[in-house]
Length: 241
Image (cartoon, rainbow, N blue to C red; front, side, top):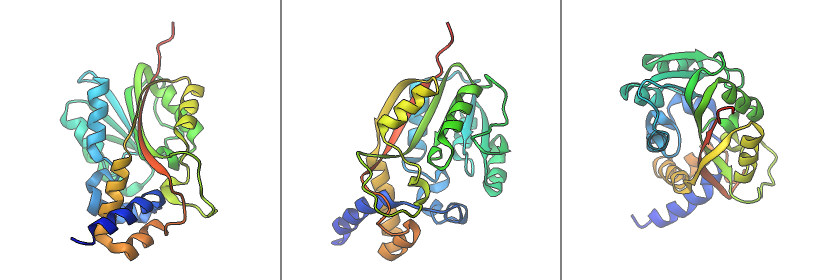
């Protein structure tokens, strides 16, 4: 146990360098730590969104980038109508146990206008064409519907000097930039919370399970980006007057 403070310290620096590949997600390296949610905070942040938004029990809720279906399973168990969109064929097949799942990009959703009451985009937006994805979210949301985003974001200026791609944090922006992107897409901000401790906790668990060498192999080393945080944002599609 004497190594725990050192492990937590190293995990804090590695938290800003997570660069997991699709193989790491599909192959189970991350799932051993997070379970099927595959993200910091897991279903606790999903439940936080549900508590805030208070969707009707028959609401149609989209999980954009649903992975193997952890959020879809939760939504289905609570009586909602879950819909998933996922690019990975493996994950789309797994998630289809819990609802209708389309194998597609969230930047081009195969859904009609004003289709759903809420959208979850959990640790996915940084991997996509952000402008296209937000535009699509606005299109398929009903007026008054909520968009919930949880993702890694820059906490201040990006000190990166390493030009190589860094997986799921490569598309990270600052909180102010995300706020402006939401405004540009005609959303109204309802909630923004910092959950940096969830990111640190995940990094510490990965370090504890795989050791420093194994974690550096998963993250691509510590030279990608630091000063990152993990943010939960809820925005609303305001009904037209």
